[in-house]
Image (cartoon, one colour):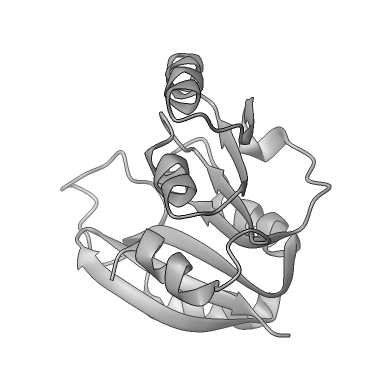
Length: 170
């Protein structure tokens, strides 16, 4: 199952789901969510060129997500979300992955989902030294319990990374 289909299956009322994607690039996931009827879309993109390209794409699809150009580590979050997706993000060298995930999970509504991609700890460092943060499924399960989240699913077909789906209890 892909991430967008998972979100679509979980939320029957798409007009009320509040979704945040960090590091959204040019906005493909946000556009696809919009195409499937989701209307409360938010994003943070650090790269100015990708951010500007996303604005063009959003205009083309006649959508108005709440997006900002900036570093998610520096953003103060005031909203709560049903889904937070820091994808292609948590393994960057300049990100304190666990601190960021701890900060994000605090902004989930009860029953909300944190969908994260993590580089598998089994990936040898010499194979790809740019991936600094590596965790095992046991690591992620332990962290989720510390944060009061349930590890709902792991999709690991994206070697060397796995997609983890966590849920805040209701």
